[in-house]
Length: 452
Image: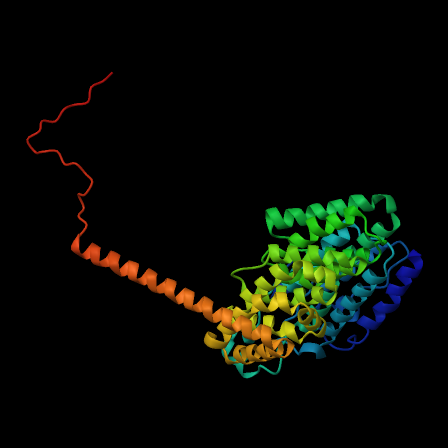
């Protein structure tokens, strides 16, 4: 296997190094030398001009060849001062980077510690850089909004990032295969992942791999047998639903939503549990997060059956009514767009007697006082939908709303009169600073406290 692997590398080497053999080599930027690029592998050396590394001898190992390739990639070129992609050394480095990506993707054995350390060093030398001026200039960026601008060194950086990001893909594959092959360790793996979620939600509020873990468990949940075990339901309630609490939920929300919908497809009765969990962690002051919750709620309601919908309709539409009156127009508009969903519209129309009395006051307030014209237009459309569903019920809700508004106005008037009365009394009886304090006469002798 090693001979085949080394032979493959040796066949790729002349291709990457033979293009520029007849041209004089350019010197790399000073940053490459300062970052520790070996002088014998710099682009200005004759050996580098001929080939990035000579064909491996029979005594060389996979690690030696891999490390030599990484040393070649530690040379950083100044694309602003040089000829860019036309330079043979620049093209040679890209070919070596591509060969590294192929080696990592096709390798059957893991990288050694020395290889990983060299990879990190190469990543640091190439990626930790000063951005070009155009990336930091707001005026020039505004003129070219339609044309994306890439770093001049993106010709190399793109492949470096591709090599760097393969680690997460490999880790996901390894975890999934371990879970699939070692059936006796599956409860332990689920418990370990649950503990990671607990620590992230309730302690640290920081973890870089939540989305990847959820992506792995999305396929794991798909393989759960029906009916679901009690421990699987506990995993949903105690591990997955609390992940809606952190502020960074948007980073992994698509993967989290997929996991939750997989549970509902396995057992539709869990929709009530999921909706109660969403209402428990519903954001109050974060409008962007609230819009994401509304999107996830719509996906959950699409899988909800009538009996489960009726159990949670009252608390659910109380929360939706609050979203309708949000001063953030996107939140109010997103909540109104729920009526465009055909399945949800059918659920609402069959439970109109319960839902309309909860929703109508919010619709009426929007129609009277909301500042956004788009929200006002969609509100009138929703009111017309309810009017077509049950005209008598809508008129009854309208009458009830008017009576409640009269009571509220009378209560506010009484409160105003009480405050005016208090203000008049305060004006006739000014408050002095010595009220309630007994001031001793000036002629009274001072008595020292007795010691007991």
